[in-house]
Length: 82
Image 1 (spheres, one colour):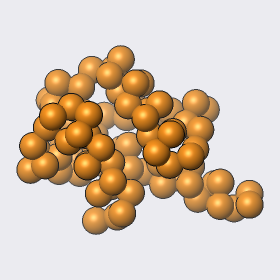
Image 2: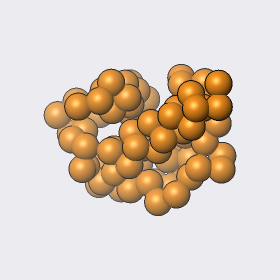
Image 3: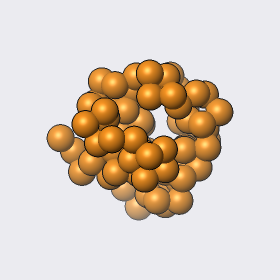
């Protein structure tokens, strides 16, 4: 499990009062009660946490792991440009 995924899971637990065992990588956000608006709000939180911009990178984000993959991709892109 990646560090990014662990950090995102911890953030989801804190922000949405979810139980950690609910947050498997393939867990659908909708099944956790996180709708599209909540997902967008969470993306802003991620941008602050990881010091990145996700505005152009948002694709289909349906699972916890989708979020981690998105953040990892942006972090790699940012590192390559540094």
